[in-house]
Length: 251
Image (cartoon, rainbow, N blue to C red; front, top):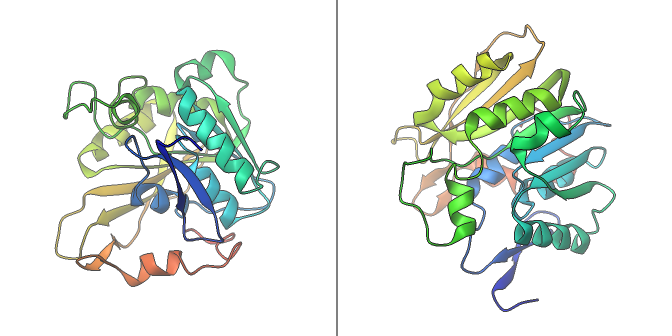
C-alpha cells in the first residue's frame, strides 16, 4: 500500500477501508446514511459519489441479499474503493464504476434501482472555504456535480416505488424539498440529526419515493453524542448490530 494511504477499521464485522492519510476521509454522516433506509432481498442499490466506498461496504454488511453499484468520478477514489471491496471479499455484492453523475440521464438505462443513496457535497458552488486538496474539495463542494443534478439522476435510475436516501446540512432542507418536487419525487421520511440533545440540528436524513403516495413522516430526532466524545446509546447500537440484523428495519 502507498505510504499516503491507511487501512481503517469500520468497527463492523471486521470490515476495513482504504483512505488517504491527508485527503478526504469519511465521517459519521456516511455511517448514519448507510443505516437509514430499509433493505430487502434482491434490492438493486446505487451509491452516487461513493468515494472510498464506505456506504457501499456498510450497506453490504447490513444485508447480504442486496447488490450495490457505487459510482465515483475521481479515479484515485475508484481505485481505493475497488481495493477495499476486494480486501473485504465483497466483489459479488459491490461493483465500483468510474462515472459522471451528470451523464446518468443521458447514458444510463432508466428504472434499474430500488434504492439510490447519496452523501452529496455539503457546500453549494461559491460557498465555504475550498480545500487545497482536490479530493476534499470535490467531495465537499459542488465543483463537479450539483444537488439538482444528483436528484435528477436519482429519479432517472429509480424504479416506480424506489427510494432516494440522502444526508444534508440542515440549512439545505428547503432546497432539497424543492428539488425533489421538481424531479417528481415525494418525501416520505425525514429525521433531523443533532450533535447533542442541547444543540440545534446540524444535518438531516431524508428519504423520497418515486410514484408513491405514502404520507410524509417526521421521525424523532437522532442525537449523535450524549456527552463530549461519547456516542449516544442509539449510535452505539449501530456498532453492535450483527450482520443482517437491520435488514427489515427502517434504520
